[in-house]
Amino acid sequence: MAKSFHAQWSSRMTFILAATGSAVGLGNIWRFSYLVGDSGGAAFVLVYLLCIALVGLPILVSEWMIGRRGQKNPINSLAELARKNGSSQAWILVGVSGVLAAFLILSFYSVIGGWSLSYTLSSLTGDFSGQDAATIEGLFGALLESPGMLMLWHTIFMALVLGIVAFGVNQGLEKAVRLLMPALVVLLVVLVIYGMFSGHFGEALAFMFAPDMSAFTGDVVLAAMGQAFFTLSLGMGIMISYGSYLGQEVKLLGAARTVIILDTVIALLAGLAIFPIVFANGLDPSEGPGLIFVTLPIAFGGMTAGWLLGLIFFLLLTFAALTSAISLLEPVVEFLEERSPLSRVPATVVASFAIWGLGVAALLSFNLWDFTVLFGLNIFDLLDTVTAKILLPLTGLGAVLFAGWVLSRDSVAKELGLSGGAATAWNVAARFIAPIGVILVFVFNLVG
Ligand code: PFF
Image 1 (cartoon, rainbow, N blue to C red):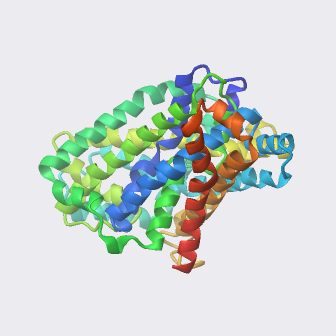
Image 2 (cartoon, rainbow, N blue to C red; image 1 turned 90 degrees about the horizontal axis):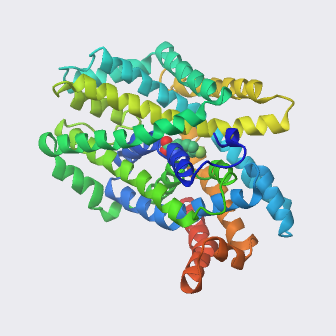
């Protein structure tokens, strides 16, 4: 997305919208809610919020700062800044692992984007109207068991992403983000209100916010940190790219606060919308990746004009997924454009085709290839785990270490408009708190 802007974002607002468009996506609604359900509820939510504030914020700001100073794509920005600051060229590995992560994530992200498209159509045709929970669960099961349907929707989703990136119509999408993001928030609020009256709201609140100490396991902490990276689009070079189109006048800390608040509010609202319905219908919160595709249609199916709300919801979700997906394709295309003789359109086609192919392997994990390949995980889960729990945190760690230790302390304080205690606080966060947080979670998980 950033590349087609060449010079600079037209305004601070456009930049914030683009960053929010990348951040808010399936991660906030689909991934957040199923991880909360799967990872012990409140324990996960609390660690996630801590990770967002203590690790996510410094890394988001570091990535933007690297991009704005380097004024190039992630790999070249790091190379250039490392050279200028007399540091090792090995820093470019941070950019390389980001591109790899983007490639892997988009392959399975597109499969879920396909589910969202499929559910948009099903809402339109009234498939959920008046159906009971078991029937709706059955519909989702049938989708997963059909490689043909999964492939069809995954292909349509990927084709949309390809079209948008290849023809560079992203600017139009940003105007749409301005309209559709508030619409998504309003719809989530409607669902939360529905849950207050028709669901088990108290139970949902306790599940999300009253932690059970025994639920704080190493894996929950690692999953929460992975989600913090995933949801803020960190560790992938995307925010470095976006930073490279950023004018000097934009205040990074303020912009980061806006993006993070919007992203977090949407995720929490999604949880508050979904869990009352889960408990009211006796569903299993740890149902896994199908959670929203089972619970929300149950709610829509039972409401007057629910088909219309369902239609609007899944359309908005698909849209949010598309704006995130195009931001994921961008680094891969940019990489191919620079490292191969391909120009933009062929590079987009080649990247999309390769990602589509890996996505097919991911979607077959739900049916024909329903076997484990490594560490007890199937291909889909492996892609998700390797990226969110390993690649994103490591790449983000690289970015914050670079900003904390390689860039000069005074220039950073000046760039962030900080002095005295606030400058020291930033320094401590970027040099120690965020990196130690990421490292501790890894070590904790290895020994735990
Ligand atoms: N942040 C997006 C979401 O939460 O759905 C997903 C995503 C987009 C992850 C871009 C990573 C990324 F670079």
